[in-house]
Image (tube, rainbow, N blue to C red; front, side, top):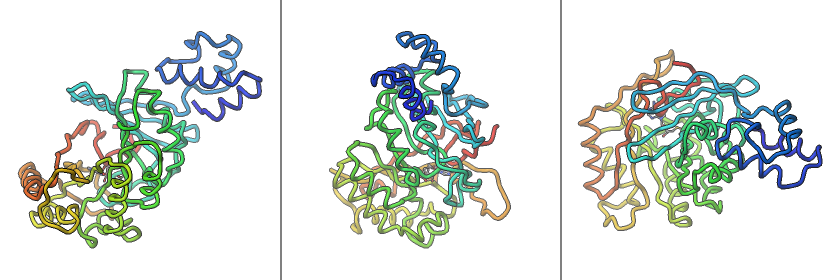
Length: 341
Ligand code: SAH
């Protein structure tokens, strides 16, 4: 629900200050509507029912993957599309992937969201309502800002939402903000008192290639971005995830793995890995619908990914290969474009 409007309505009624907290606490616990908020005066419940939509975003189609992943489409009150995903892992983790913008103004050439038109920033309530949607289905405990949009371009709303995520079950330490490397945003996150995690979409360890994949690299070059991430670690002592989407014949060669290791090892060769600053997450590429004027990419095969991983590990760089979830419902990384399936 729109929490600012809620405050307004409560203030106009002359309600006591604790009312807003009361309403929020119920919502954060996953109730389905005002009628379940049994300790609110009935007249207030009725007024809220009439005047304040319980969710600031309208849920549309849902898609269920065979691996348990659930994708939900939403529309804002002004008709903007967004998507969010719930991932269920075997170890019991329930992780949601939320959008910070409808569309994205950046134009990473391999990303479906980057190819759609940018609509606007989402409000903190619109972000939280994605989390609440899933919370009404089941308990959630992790959140990644890896849906549509660049969180650092909407950081006020993102941080405002993060302040409240613990009420919904997601602690700051289990919340990850993923960025293309928007340096002012990384710096703000470094200064923030919340112990949030940072993920950095790198995808190339050398400037020319990175600029081809991610035009934002022209504005915030690789070396400066890595420096900003080091500063984040120095202040927060929270390891930074480096995301690296594996594109066949583009960024998946052995020498490129060594180059990435050198970059992350601070220009050195192999390092004793007692306290690595970075952990690389290799992401199998999720193909996106081809469109005019966009280069087509193919994902690296299993063996190339395994070899790339081994090369990084030989240099002392911690690596994981990301499980692809929800590919059959176009819910995997980079596939969110606000379209139904
Ligand atoms: N704008 C932020 C967060 C959204 S994207 C960022 O770029 O980090 C979340 C991750 O998915 C990013 O690492 C992004 O590069 C990656 N991604 C985008 N398109 C993809 C695709 N088609 N296949 C796999 N990963 C993709």
